[in-house]
Amino acid sequence: MKVVLVCSSLFILLLAYLFITFINQEDSGGNTINQEKEQGDMTTTPTTRILLAIAHPDDECMFFSPTLEYYQSIQGEESIVHVVCLSNGNADGLGKIREKELVNSCRCYGVARDHVAVVNDTNLPDGMDKDWDVTVISKYIQKYVDQWGITQILTFDHGGVSGHPNHISVSNGVKLYLKNNTKVKGYELESVNIIRKYIGIGDVFFSKWIFSSYDRLYTAYKLFGKNFEAMKQHASQLVWFRYLFVLFSRYSYCNTLVEIKQD
Ligand SMILES: [Zn+2]
Image 1: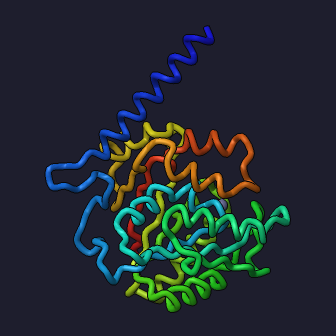
Image 2: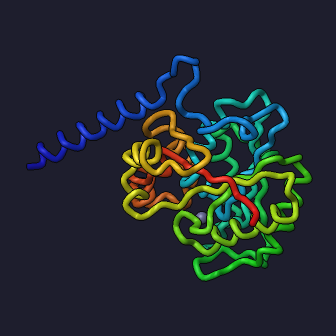
């Protein structure tokens, strides 16, 4: 029985490897399939500067890894990606350690130390039962957009991927900022139902060919790639189920983003 299970697991992993290799094959135009779904005004130009707004150290590699991989692959000598983390994840008193872990994780994606900011504000305490003041978040977004000359912001959507109130607050804070600053574009990471969330690489298939109502699709470049490398930098958070999350989460293999439109 055990032999059958091991053989089945190896076979599934082999299929997954072949699948992700297939979707990253070069097309006839020399482009990999890991790219933006549409071009036009979403094309990255030399003046594009991206701000990834997250709530906690490790959100970047747990949820946005395929996106960060994509930008690492296209950026020149200077990273176009900047990261602002609206808390240092101090719920267990490990905030200072987690700040350093975030910097090291971002480095895996080619994001330099001076492109990473961690907010440590008592108005934005890390916690599952803490809603954050969106006006405070909006002010920090304003600060870093101005400081880095940001043209596009990426963040969570209304579901926050996991429903975490801090993620949702960041999404709402970014939307408040965008409402008053229409020159900056925003894109939100789609939250999906629990089945799609945990079918791992299988959701690349659903995202590409069935549920394709997003504006951008980014897929991981290889199995067990950057997300594992980056997650290992978060040593203070590495409990066994984190590895399971990385293995089975669709966010390890694909990100779908939707443009934030103002009503
Ligand atoms: Zn988080």
